[in-house]
Image (cartoon, rainbow, N blue to C red):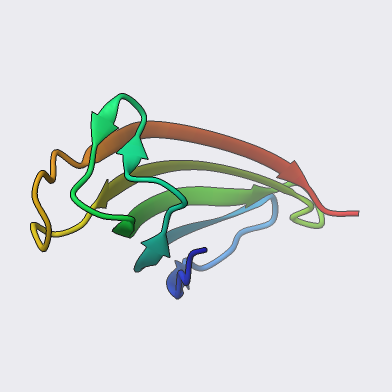
Length: 95
C-alpha cells in the first residue's frame, strides 16, 4: 500500500507540446522485507520520484515521460540499502 502525493509544474504550452516536471514522495507498506535481492530492515519504505515529461500532439493526447525513483526506509530500520531505479520511461495516450 502506498500514499504518494505529487506536485507537477506545467510549463507554458505551444501548439504541439507542453513540458512538465513533477515530484512525488510518500510512505509504502510492503508485504515482505525484501526489495529485489536486498533485505530491508522493515516492511515500511518511502518512495521518492522525480519526473520530466511532455504532452504531445495537436490535442496533447500523447504523454511521454522519464522518471527516477528511490526507495528506502530513511535509516529508520537497519539494514537500509535502499534501491534506485534510475530510468523509467512511460508512453501513454488519452482517449
